[in-house]
Image 1 (cartoon, one colour):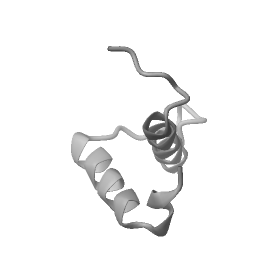
Image 2 (image 1 turned 90 degrees about the vertical axis):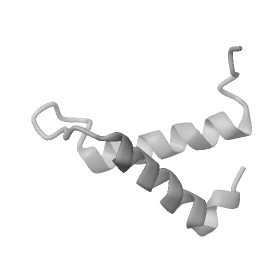
Image 3 (image 1 turned 180 degrees about the horizontal axis):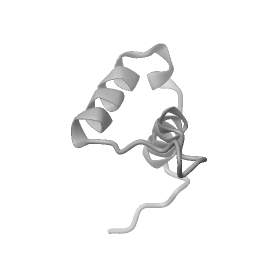
Image 4 (image 1 turned 45 degrees about the vertical axis):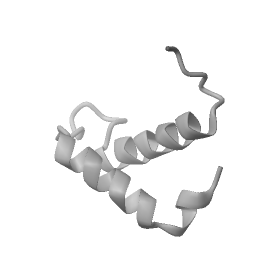
Length: 56
């Protein structure tokens, strides 16, 4: 099943991924840090607890 990038859930997940990339320094190969599954899950849980998690 292919998901549309316009679906609210997909949009939120893409925004979270963008936040993670910025925190990791993804714009620079020299500064980019590896990320673990635990880091991704922590970010998702933190986002879920934040006030902006209700934004669609």
